[in-house]
Image (cartoon, rainbow, N blue to C red):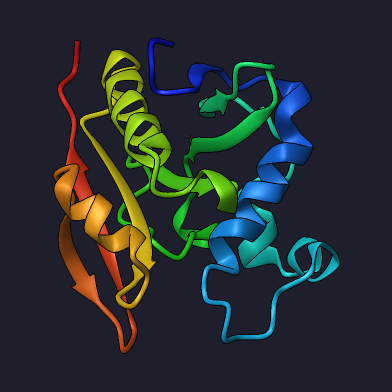
Length: 168
């Protein structure tokens, strides 16, 4: 852990509720918009499928924990088919990444550490690319650019981004 104040561990089935929390943190990044509730997220198929049924075959996840072992952020990836595409869908063999950090832990390197670790683990699992969707006004977009994601498609307010990862 060193002086960064958090450590990383693999996400487990027991982290499902925290992943819901982090999905909501990602969805509700803009404080000027009405927040999406957990119930609304669970009822909306395009949002719910990011966590629903965690852990399924092919899922990978990493959780950042504080010195007391409390989760402060998470990153996870899932494969989606064209018939159940995520917002950042690129192809059925390119997993989509979701990332969320507890607000009080933002700006402390948690997101960067999580994303770097996920890229490493994705490569270790044989994936050559990972993808995501981010609204252009979201400050997380800068992190994704810094971590090597490039825009492959743009919508009115958001970009689909891909990162090539090293297969190990």
